[in-house]
Image (tube, rainbow, N blue to C red):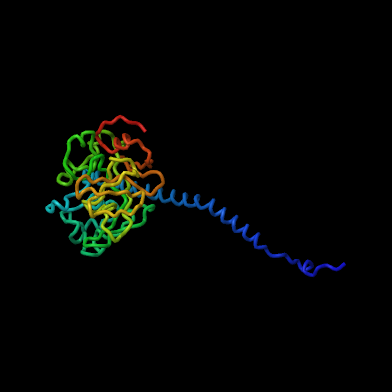
Length: 322
C-alpha cells in the first residue's frame, strides 16, 4: 500500500480561518481580563508615590516649624491689597524640599508677578521651575499655566482651609466650630495665621494639614484650580463638602473652565466672594490626606461630613470617631 508523500515528510495542515479567529478571540478575552488588573496595579503604584510626596510635604512643614517655631502662613496679600507680597505657603517650604537655590533667590517681600518669581510671558522665573513634588502622578495633565503675563507651575497638594469659604464677608458664626491651621484671621488676606502645634488642642494626629485637588487640564487657560503659587488661586482646600463631591467648586468668574469632567464640577463664585474648592483626586474612591503629626492616610469619598469637618479644625473639640 502506498503512503501519502506529505505524511512521510511530517506535513501538518495550517490553521483554518475559524481556528485562527477562535485563537484571536481567546487572546482578546485574556487581555480584557488582565487589563483591569494591570491598570489597578499601576494606579496603586501612583497612589503610593502620591503618598510619599505628601509625606515629604508634611516633613517640610515639620522642619519649617522646628526652624521658625510655627507653620508657614497659607498666603500673603492679594490682588486687591497690592501693598502685600503675593505669596503662598509653597515658596516658604522650598528650602526644605531641596530647592535651596530657589529659596536663596526668593524675595520675601516680592510680588508673584515681579522677577525673579515671574518673568513676563515665560516660564523662566522661579514660578516656572518644574518641581516633581508639586504634582500627583495620577493627575499628569495641565502642569503649568503657559498663557498670559505671569506664567507658573500648577500643583495638586494644597493646605487645609477648613469649613470656611475663601473671601466674602467675615461671619463669626461660620468660624465658631473651630479653625483650620492655614485659615486667615477674620478675612481673606489681611491677617494670615502663623499657627503653632501647641495651638492644635484637638491634637496633631486629628488635624489635617494637606490634601489634594485636581489641576485644570489645559496649559492655555488661567484656571485657578491647582494654581498653588498664586495667593488668589486654589492653594487650599475646604471641608465644606466631602472629598470628590458632586457639588461644584466655586471659583471667581473668568478663572475657571467648564470642561464637563465629572471629577471637576465648577460654578461661578461671583468674582471673589465665597470661593470654595473641595479635596479631589483621580485616585479611585478618595483622596490622600497628610495630618499635622506627619502621618498620611487615604480618606474615602463616603466619609461622614461631620468627621471630615472635624478633621479640618485644629481646636474645635469635636467628639467624633471613624
